[in-house]
Image (cartoon, rainbow, N blue to C red; front, side, top):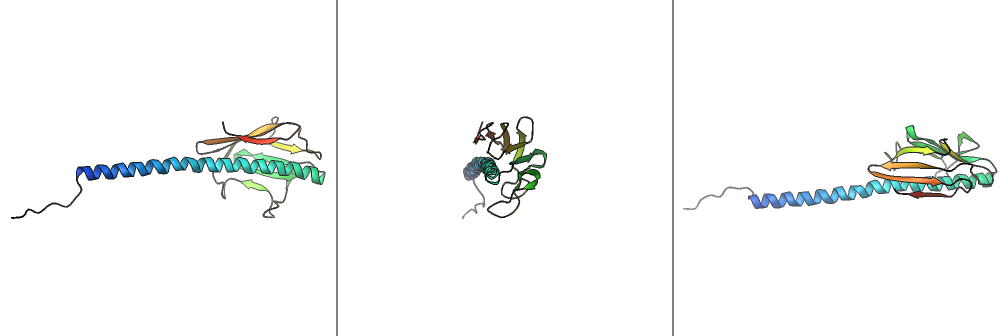
Length: 160
């Protein structure tokens, strides 16, 4: 007489499945850190290019241009002559207002922006800025700082 075997998983099969699930979870979490780094780094690179663009616009148009930051609203505006006049983005022909509440850089945080105590960096018609300073971005656990040197306007980003 044959005995009927019960359907189900053995203890070893269950342990192997849990190990595989644990491994896959670790891989996914490790790759999520890469996503955090990518977004924060992309925001820093975008800001560097926007600051350089504002400096060049000041030299070309012979009008003061700069970047004004609104950290509480997670955005900044690249402007010409006054903070109320946003420069037109040469790529999409829209005002250069970078809002981190929507779009590809959604949830990137502007932690601080300080240029001699002011929330803006401005260049005169010869491309000179009176004060240097920094802007700090975070996304998840990643943080990047964009630095602007005084007088020269040299702009670069670092990761602490």
